[in-house]
Length: 389
Image (cartoon, rainbow, N blue to C red; front, side):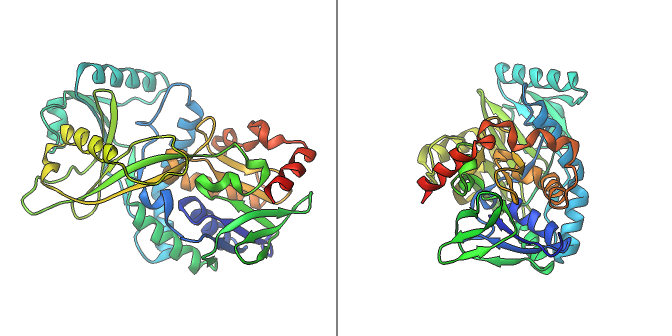
Protein backbone atom coordinates (compact mmCIF):
# COMPACT_ATOMS: atom_id res chain seq x y z
CA UNK A 1 0.00 0.00 0.00
CA UNK A 2 2.90 2.40 0.60
CA UNK A 3 3.60 2.65 -3.17
CA UNK A 4 -0.04 3.35 -4.03
CA UNK A 5 -1.02 6.68 -5.57
CA UNK A 6 -3.77 8.30 -3.52
CA UNK A 7 -5.65 11.34 -4.76
CA UNK A 8 -7.59 13.25 -2.10
CA UNK A 9 -10.28 15.49 -3.56
CA UNK A 10 -10.94 18.46 -1.29
CA UNK A 11 -8.51 20.33 0.96
CA UNK A 12 -10.80 21.32 3.79
CA UNK A 13 -10.22 20.07 7.33
CA UNK A 14 -11.21 16.48 6.48
CA UNK A 15 -9.19 16.21 3.27
CA UNK A 16 -6.11 17.84 4.81
CA UNK A 17 -6.27 15.62 7.91
CA UNK A 18 -6.59 12.45 5.84
CA UNK A 19 -3.88 13.52 3.37
CA UNK A 20 -1.47 14.25 6.23
CA UNK A 21 -2.10 10.88 7.86
CA UNK A 22 -1.78 9.02 4.56
CA UNK A 23 1.40 10.81 3.48
CA UNK A 24 2.92 10.23 6.92
CA UNK A 25 2.21 6.51 6.43
CA UNK A 26 4.17 6.46 3.18
CA UNK A 27 1.50 6.79 0.48
CA UNK A 28 2.06 8.97 -2.57
CA UNK A 29 -0.58 11.62 -1.93
CA UNK A 30 -1.91 14.31 -4.25
CA UNK A 31 -4.40 16.76 -2.77
CA UNK A 32 -6.70 18.39 -5.34
CA UNK A 33 -8.56 21.62 -4.59
CA UNK A 34 -8.89 24.86 -6.59
CA UNK A 35 -8.74 26.86 -3.33
CA UNK A 36 -7.18 24.81 -0.51
CA UNK A 37 -8.28 25.50 3.08
CA UNK A 38 -11.32 27.50 2.00
CA UNK A 39 -15.05 26.80 1.88
CA UNK A 40 -16.94 25.62 4.95
CA UNK A 41 -13.71 24.84 6.83
CA UNK A 42 -12.53 28.44 6.47
CA UNK A 43 -15.90 29.85 7.58
CA UNK A 44 -16.43 27.44 10.51
CA UNK A 45 -16.82 28.53 14.12
CA UNK A 46 -14.55 25.74 15.35
CA UNK A 47 -16.73 24.19 18.06
CA UNK A 48 -15.74 20.70 19.18
CA UNK A 49 -19.01 20.11 20.95
CA UNK A 50 -20.53 16.63 20.73
CA UNK A 51 -22.39 16.90 24.04
CA UNK A 52 -23.94 20.34 23.64
CA UNK A 53 -25.01 19.53 20.06
CA UNK A 54 -26.53 16.18 21.07
CA UNK A 55 -30.06 15.46 19.90
CA UNK A 56 -32.42 12.57 20.74
CA UNK A 57 -32.35 9.98 17.97
CA UNK A 58 -28.75 10.79 16.99
CA UNK A 59 -27.00 8.61 19.57
CA UNK A 60 -24.58 7.18 16.99
CA UNK A 61 -23.45 10.71 16.10
CA UNK A 62 -23.00 11.55 19.79
CA UNK A 63 -20.82 8.47 20.35
CA UNK A 64 -18.75 9.30 17.28
CA UNK A 65 -18.30 12.89 18.44
CA UNK A 66 -17.38 11.94 22.01
CA UNK A 67 -14.75 9.52 20.70
CA UNK A 68 -13.32 12.19 18.40
CA UNK A 69 -13.19 14.99 21.00
CA UNK A 70 -11.36 12.55 23.30
CA UNK A 71 -8.69 12.25 20.60
CA UNK A 72 -8.46 15.98 19.97
CA UNK A 73 -5.70 16.99 22.44
CA UNK A 74 -3.35 14.29 21.11
CA UNK A 75 -4.31 15.10 17.53
CA UNK A 76 -3.57 18.80 18.06
CA UNK A 77 -0.18 18.00 19.58
CA UNK A 78 0.73 15.76 16.64
CA UNK A 79 -0.39 18.32 14.07
CA UNK A 80 1.57 21.10 15.79
CA UNK A 81 4.72 18.96 16.01
CA UNK A 82 4.44 17.90 12.35
CA UNK A 83 3.71 21.42 11.12
CA UNK A 84 6.05 23.41 13.35
CA UNK A 85 3.19 25.75 14.26
CA UNK A 86 0.25 25.67 16.71
CA UNK A 87 -2.97 23.90 15.80
CA UNK A 88 -5.27 26.34 17.63
CA UNK A 89 -6.93 24.05 20.19
CA UNK A 90 -8.79 25.76 23.06
CA UNK A 91 -9.55 23.71 26.17
CA UNK A 92 -11.51 26.16 28.35
CA UNK A 93 -14.78 24.30 27.74
CA UNK A 94 -18.33 25.33 26.89
CA UNK A 95 -21.34 26.82 28.63
CA UNK A 96 -24.88 26.48 27.28
CA UNK A 97 -27.21 29.24 28.42
CA UNK A 98 -30.90 30.06 28.21
CA UNK A 99 -32.87 33.28 28.48
CA UNK A 100 -36.62 32.67 28.89
CA UNK A 101 -38.54 29.90 30.66
CA UNK A 102 -39.09 27.98 27.42
CA UNK A 103 -35.37 27.99 26.68
CA UNK A 104 -34.57 26.80 30.20
CA UNK A 105 -37.08 23.96 29.82
CA UNK A 106 -35.38 22.89 26.57
CA UNK A 107 -31.99 22.83 28.31
CA UNK A 108 -33.50 20.78 31.13
CA UNK A 109 -34.69 18.29 28.50
CA UNK A 110 -31.18 18.15 27.01
CA UNK A 111 -29.60 17.65 30.45
CA UNK A 112 -32.03 14.85 31.25
CA UNK A 113 -31.39 13.15 27.92
CA UNK A 114 -27.63 13.30 28.43
CA UNK A 115 -27.95 12.01 31.99
CA UNK A 116 -29.90 8.98 30.73
CA UNK A 117 -26.99 8.30 28.37
CA UNK A 118 -24.52 8.57 31.25
CA UNK A 119 -23.20 11.97 30.15
CA UNK A 120 -24.00 14.20 33.08
CA UNK A 121 -23.56 17.94 32.81
CA UNK A 122 -23.53 20.57 35.56
CA UNK A 123 -26.63 22.74 35.84
CA UNK A 124 -25.96 26.35 36.86
CA UNK A 125 -28.07 29.38 37.73
CA UNK A 126 -27.67 32.66 35.90
CA UNK A 127 -25.66 34.05 38.82
CA UNK A 128 -23.34 31.02 38.82
CA UNK A 129 -22.84 31.33 35.06
CA UNK A 130 -21.93 35.02 35.39
CA UNK A 131 -19.35 34.14 38.02
CA UNK A 132 -17.77 31.82 35.44
CA UNK A 133 -18.20 34.24 32.54
CA UNK A 134 -18.77 37.88 33.56
CA UNK A 135 -19.50 38.79 29.93
CA UNK A 136 -22.90 37.07 30.16
CA UNK A 137 -25.76 39.53 30.50
CA UNK A 138 -28.71 39.72 32.90
CA UNK A 139 -31.08 38.04 30.44
CA UNK A 140 -29.25 34.75 31.01
CA UNK A 141 -31.35 32.87 33.59
CA UNK A 142 -29.59 29.50 33.74
CA UNK A 143 -27.68 26.91 31.83
CA UNK A 144 -25.15 24.10 31.74
CA UNK A 145 -21.39 23.80 32.06
CA UNK A 146 -19.77 21.24 29.74
CA UNK A 147 -16.00 21.40 30.30
CA UNK A 148 -15.20 18.58 27.87
CA UNK A 149 -16.73 20.34 24.84
CA UNK A 150 -13.74 22.20 23.38
CA UNK A 151 -13.03 24.57 20.47
CA UNK A 152 -10.37 25.20 17.86
CA UNK A 153 -9.31 28.20 15.81
CA UNK A 154 -10.24 26.77 12.43
CA UNK A 155 -7.89 28.99 10.41
CA UNK A 156 -4.88 28.19 12.59
CA UNK A 157 -5.75 24.51 12.25
CA UNK A 158 -6.06 24.64 8.46
CA UNK A 159 -2.68 26.35 8.11
CA UNK A 160 -1.07 23.79 10.40
CA UNK A 161 -2.66 20.83 8.62
CA UNK A 162 -1.51 22.03 5.20
CA UNK A 163 2.03 22.55 6.49
CA UNK A 164 2.01 19.10 8.11
CA UNK A 165 0.69 17.42 4.95
CA UNK A 166 3.26 19.09 2.71
CA UNK A 167 6.10 18.32 5.13
CA UNK A 168 4.99 14.67 5.02
CA UNK A 169 5.27 14.69 1.22
CA UNK A 170 1.72 15.38 0.05
CA UNK A 171 1.53 17.43 -3.16
CA UNK A 172 -1.14 20.14 -3.10
CA UNK A 173 -2.46 20.83 -6.62
CA UNK A 174 -4.71 23.86 -7.00
CA UNK A 175 -7.07 22.45 -9.59
CA UNK A 176 -10.72 21.42 -9.58
CA UNK A 177 -11.68 17.76 -9.75
CA UNK A 178 -14.55 17.10 -12.14
CA UNK A 179 -15.10 13.34 -11.84
CA UNK A 180 -13.65 10.17 -10.39
CA UNK A 181 -12.77 7.78 -13.23
CA UNK A 182 -13.09 4.00 -13.14
CA UNK A 183 -13.10 1.06 -15.55
CA UNK A 184 -16.23 -0.51 -14.13
CA UNK A 185 -14.30 -2.48 -11.53
CA UNK A 186 -11.85 -0.12 -9.85
CA UNK A 187 -10.87 3.54 -9.93
CA UNK A 188 -8.31 4.65 -12.49
CA UNK A 189 -7.91 8.32 -11.72
CA UNK A 190 -9.51 11.75 -11.52
CA UNK A 191 -10.54 14.09 -14.31
CA UNK A 192 -9.48 17.66 -13.54
CA UNK A 193 -10.04 20.89 -15.48
CA UNK A 194 -7.28 20.18 -17.93
CA UNK A 195 -6.06 16.62 -17.53
CA UNK A 196 -6.60 13.14 -16.12
CA UNK A 197 -4.64 12.29 -12.98
CA UNK A 198 -3.92 8.52 -12.72
CA UNK A 199 -4.64 7.12 -9.27
CA UNK A 200 -4.82 3.75 -7.57
CA UNK A 201 -6.96 5.13 -4.75
CA UNK A 202 -9.27 8.14 -4.58
CA UNK A 203 -10.69 9.73 -1.43
CA UNK A 204 -13.64 12.06 -1.99
CA UNK A 205 -13.67 14.68 0.77
CA UNK A 206 -15.03 17.60 -1.22
CA UNK A 207 -17.67 18.65 1.30
CA UNK A 208 -20.94 19.87 -0.18
CA UNK A 209 -19.62 19.27 -3.71
CA UNK A 210 -18.87 15.57 -3.17
CA UNK A 211 -22.06 14.19 -4.71
CA UNK A 212 -21.16 15.42 -8.20
CA UNK A 213 -17.88 13.49 -8.39
CA UNK A 214 -19.15 9.93 -8.87
CA UNK A 215 -22.59 8.45 -9.65
CA UNK A 216 -22.70 6.32 -6.47
CA UNK A 217 -22.63 9.52 -4.39
CA UNK A 218 -25.63 11.15 -6.02
CA UNK A 219 -28.20 12.24 -3.49
CA UNK A 220 -26.03 11.39 -0.49
CA UNK A 221 -24.58 14.84 0.20
CA UNK A 222 -26.31 18.21 -0.03
CA UNK A 223 -25.28 21.82 0.76
CA UNK A 224 -26.59 23.40 3.98
CA UNK A 225 -25.88 27.12 4.14
CA UNK A 226 -24.58 28.72 7.32
CA UNK A 227 -23.77 32.40 7.91
CA UNK A 228 -21.30 33.58 10.56
CA UNK A 229 -19.82 36.84 11.82
CA UNK A 230 -16.36 37.62 13.14
CA UNK A 231 -16.12 40.35 15.76
CA UNK A 232 -12.92 42.11 16.81
CA UNK A 233 -12.43 43.44 20.34
CA UNK A 234 -11.98 47.21 20.56
CA UNK A 235 -10.19 49.16 23.27
CA UNK A 236 -12.51 49.78 26.21
CA UNK A 237 -15.03 47.09 25.25
CA UNK A 238 -15.99 44.40 27.76
CA UNK A 239 -13.70 41.36 27.53
CA UNK A 240 -14.96 38.37 25.57
CA UNK A 241 -15.83 35.14 27.38
CA UNK A 242 -13.02 32.62 27.73
CA UNK A 243 -15.33 29.66 27.06
CA UNK A 244 -17.50 28.90 24.07
CA UNK A 245 -21.02 30.19 24.76
CA UNK A 246 -23.94 28.37 23.17
CA UNK A 247 -27.33 29.94 23.77
CA UNK A 248 -31.03 29.53 23.20
CA UNK A 249 -32.76 32.88 22.73
CA UNK A 250 -36.52 32.54 22.39
CA UNK A 251 -35.96 29.10 20.90
CA UNK A 252 -33.29 30.21 18.43
CA UNK A 253 -29.75 28.82 18.75
CA UNK A 254 -26.71 31.09 18.61
CA UNK A 255 -23.08 30.57 19.59
CA UNK A 256 -20.01 32.67 20.34
CA UNK A 257 -16.58 31.09 20.08
CA UNK A 258 -13.59 33.06 21.46
CA UNK A 259 -10.43 33.69 19.48
CA UNK A 260 -6.97 34.77 20.53
CA UNK A 261 -6.78 38.54 20.83
CA UNK A 262 -10.26 38.87 22.31
CA UNK A 263 -12.26 38.32 19.14
CA UNK A 264 -15.39 36.21 18.75
CA UNK A 265 -16.97 34.13 16.01
CA UNK A 266 -20.77 34.40 16.10
CA UNK A 267 -22.92 31.85 14.32
CA UNK A 268 -24.67 30.27 12.80
CA UNK A 269 -27.72 30.40 10.65
CA UNK A 270 -28.88 27.30 8.80
CA UNK A 271 -30.77 27.20 5.52
CA UNK A 272 -31.37 24.78 2.65
CA UNK A 273 -30.80 27.14 -0.29
CA UNK A 274 -28.65 25.09 -2.66
CA UNK A 275 -25.20 26.47 -3.42
CA UNK A 276 -26.00 30.06 -2.43
CA UNK A 277 -23.10 31.61 -0.48
CA UNK A 278 -24.28 35.22 -0.25
CA UNK A 279 -24.54 36.75 3.21
CA UNK A 280 -28.03 38.08 3.88
CA UNK A 281 -29.08 41.17 5.80
CA UNK A 282 -31.54 39.06 7.77
CA UNK A 283 -28.85 36.58 8.76
CA UNK A 284 -26.55 39.30 10.08
CA UNK A 285 -29.43 41.00 11.92
CA UNK A 286 -30.60 37.81 13.60
CA UNK A 287 -27.13 36.74 14.72
CA UNK A 288 -26.29 40.13 16.21
CA UNK A 289 -29.68 40.50 17.90
CA UNK A 290 -29.52 37.12 19.61
CA UNK A 291 -25.83 37.28 20.49
CA UNK A 292 -26.25 40.72 22.07
CA UNK A 293 -29.07 39.41 24.28
CA UNK A 294 -26.59 36.96 25.78
CA UNK A 295 -23.37 39.01 25.57
CA UNK A 296 -24.43 42.68 25.66
CA UNK A 297 -20.84 43.93 25.60
CA UNK A 298 -20.40 42.93 21.94
CA UNK A 299 -22.24 46.09 20.90
CA UNK A 300 -18.87 47.86 21.31
CA UNK A 301 -16.95 45.34 19.16
CA UNK A 302 -16.03 45.85 15.52
CA UNK A 303 -17.77 43.78 12.86
CA UNK A 304 -14.68 42.42 11.12
CA UNK A 305 -16.18 39.88 8.73
CA UNK A 306 -19.41 38.31 7.56
CA UNK A 307 -19.33 35.10 5.57
CA UNK A 308 -21.41 32.14 4.46
CA UNK A 309 -20.32 28.55 3.95
CA UNK A 310 -21.89 25.34 2.71
CA UNK A 311 -21.90 22.48 5.21
CA UNK A 312 -22.08 19.01 3.64
CA UNK A 313 -25.26 17.42 4.93
CA UNK A 314 -26.18 13.73 4.72
CA UNK A 315 -29.68 12.22 4.88
CA UNK A 316 -29.29 11.18 8.54
CA UNK A 317 -26.72 13.78 9.76
CA UNK A 318 -24.04 11.08 10.16
CA UNK A 319 -21.01 11.47 7.91
CA UNK A 320 -20.08 9.08 5.11
CA UNK A 321 -16.77 7.39 5.89
CA UNK A 322 -15.80 4.23 4.05
CA UNK A 323 -15.35 2.40 0.77
CA UNK A 324 -18.08 2.79 -1.83
CA UNK A 325 -18.64 1.95 -5.48
CA UNK A 326 -15.68 0.66 -7.52
CA UNK A 327 -12.63 -0.77 -5.79
CA UNK A 328 -10.27 1.92 -4.60
CA UNK A 329 -12.93 4.61 -4.07
CA UNK A 330 -13.24 5.95 -0.51
CA UNK A 331 -15.38 8.76 0.86
CA UNK A 332 -15.02 11.00 3.90
CA UNK A 333 -17.73 13.61 3.60
CA UNK A 334 -21.19 14.58 4.84
CA UNK A 335 -19.92 15.83 8.22
CA UNK A 336 -22.48 18.68 8.27
CA UNK A 337 -21.74 20.87 11.36
CA UNK A 338 -19.08 18.52 12.69
CA UNK A 339 -16.14 18.60 10.29
CA UNK A 340 -13.75 20.15 12.78
CA UNK A 341 -14.93 17.90 15.59
CA UNK A 342 -14.70 14.67 13.61
CA UNK A 343 -11.38 15.30 11.84
CA UNK A 344 -9.26 13.11 14.18
CA UNK A 345 -11.49 10.04 14.14
CA UNK A 346 -12.19 10.39 10.40
CA UNK A 347 -8.49 10.58 9.53
CA UNK A 348 -7.78 7.52 11.68
CA UNK A 349 -10.62 5.61 10.02
CA UNK A 350 -9.43 6.48 6.51
CA UNK A 351 -5.89 5.40 7.35
CA UNK A 352 -7.25 2.09 8.64
CA UNK A 353 -9.25 1.60 5.43
CA UNK A 354 -6.18 2.34 3.31
CA UNK A 355 -4.29 -0.39 5.14
CA UNK A 356 -7.16 -2.88 5.06
CA UNK A 357 -7.80 -2.69 8.79
CA UNK A 358 -11.16 -2.35 10.58
CA UNK A 359 -12.27 1.18 11.31
CA UNK A 360 -12.81 2.24 14.96
CA UNK A 361 -16.03 0.85 16.42
CA UNK A 362 -17.62 4.30 16.68
CA UNK A 363 -17.10 4.94 12.94
CA UNK A 364 -18.96 1.86 11.73
CA UNK A 365 -22.29 3.67 11.89
CA UNK A 366 -20.90 6.09 9.26
CA UNK A 367 -20.42 3.36 6.63
CA UNK A 368 -21.88 4.79 3.38
CA UNK A 369 -23.41 1.42 2.51
CA UNK A 370 -26.21 2.18 4.95
CA UNK A 371 -27.84 4.05 2.06
CA UNK A 372 -29.30 2.36 -0.97
CA UNK A 373 -27.39 4.74 -3.24
CA UNK A 374 -24.15 3.06 -2.18
CA UNK A 375 -25.55 -0.31 -3.36
CA UNK A 376 -26.58 0.75 -6.83
CA UNK A 377 -26.74 -1.99 -9.43
CA UNK A 378 -23.77 -1.79 -11.86
CA UNK A 379 -26.15 -1.07 -14.77
CA UNK A 380 -27.63 1.90 -12.88
CA UNK A 381 -24.14 3.24 -12.21
CA UNK A 382 -23.21 2.81 -15.88
CA UNK A 383 -26.29 4.76 -17.00
CA UNK A 384 -25.47 7.50 -14.49
CA UNK A 385 -21.93 7.74 -15.88
CA UNK A 386 -23.33 8.29 -19.36
CA UNK A 387 -25.60 11.03 -17.98
CA UNK A 388 -22.64 12.61 -16.19
CA UNK A 389 -20.74 13.01 -19.45
